[in-house]
Image (cartoon, rainbow, N blue to C red):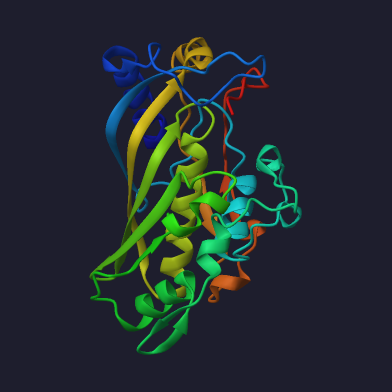
Length: 276
């Protein structure tokens, strides 16, 4: 059993057994038919993934890891908010009239700020500090810019990364305000595990631990039967993670710089109902 599957099963069981339902609240999300999309949730879930042991991709169902990484590169490398520059269609439903998602995600990472060493955007500052200020406790990014929230198609869900170097090991904390456990959990875990590997490699470090902190960790009501059936399956072992070791420039990575050798997964009944 992969560690990602083990953590996922434990988290889902905890939500189903000990979670709190919001059936009595006026919720924002809706299903396609206009019905309120209620959830059962746990507050303050913390999951830890040791990237030295294995890459945290689920096998209970397929995670399209190259699409995950493509979106991550769209945000962190291209620093884009233009949906046309993304290879997948995950943001289509949030498109604004100008074809962007507003001043969200990649837009925020691309804004330059003044430091004593000069002008940097958030990504370049992380890379600079990982190379020159490894002892710093200030290596972080933040997408939750209150001044620009009104111009975002969606408030950032995964909104903050904190990087920390211990010896020659790069660890990181991903903060997330809200997490849909069926459709988005492993998608985000795979993305930011890959990001830690990328940042470590271009900085001459080893990838260590990814700590995922989720404020509102939930399962939508119409997803509950699907999740219950999924966690009854017998997981496979984790695949071997392969990253192109020749890449030493963060901006040279592509989605094809990564492989999961021997990745096996269980089939899943698509499509999944989506709440928006």
